[in-house]
Image (tube, each protein chain N blue to C red):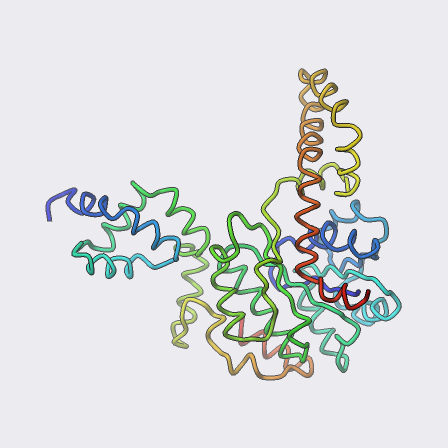
Length: 245
Length: 114
């Protein structure tokens, strides 16, 4: 699958979702980072490349030559990227899905809706434009009324409330530790007892203590978080995976 | 109305107010709803009650809706001329349906909708 994670607004978790939700569930797909500011996710994947949004020719080439590719379009490059998309005739034809993350907050939801509408206006099929509800605290219905209403009104994109990722501080800790989630799951299984012992030993040394405290948080949450992401991925692309099988 | 009377009246409607906050109803609309149950309070009294007695719920309501933020108010001022609602996304279904087939269309779409 080739998936573009994009949105004209920033700080909705595009890079986090690309690195933790998509890449590990797509045969460790190559991550193409179309971004000039946020480079954190580089440390979390094996195969990545960075490119500027105006180099759409190169991006399109990557879409053609890769079977599995995640393109993470940072907000700072989004307009250049979409302008590039319109410079080709059906520049989206190699893309299986456009994933648009959104978070609670009316501004962010408005921007996600606008992104979806824009793609639909470019001719992208409704079934290819999918919303993922990110940083959910309680429930999608309660926190995203604006977006759910717009999905009904415009009927040009898919907003399935099951495609959701809960608010979770593990992502910040994983980024700080430069540790992918699957590595954290292995770490949790093999090293939790030793970690607790070590944490007691370094309790007096603030810098080490901080790192070990982060590791403990990651170790205790990794497995559950991974399960939640599995569910979100199935809800997002389950039917596409079934079609491939 | 005697000082404190509004707060006393509103205290009996606490559960209703929490429900209305969760539905993101505006304070002025809440005041209208309350009139239906014979509670007559001004929007400013309601606002003060939110701050004093339902501060957590109100804070969350503001966080979700973006109401009261300077950037939200500027958005409203800009959209008033076009007769738009709070949500820019509901402004122009016709514009959403206009096809974007080249960069000029894209630029037009962005300048119209942002």
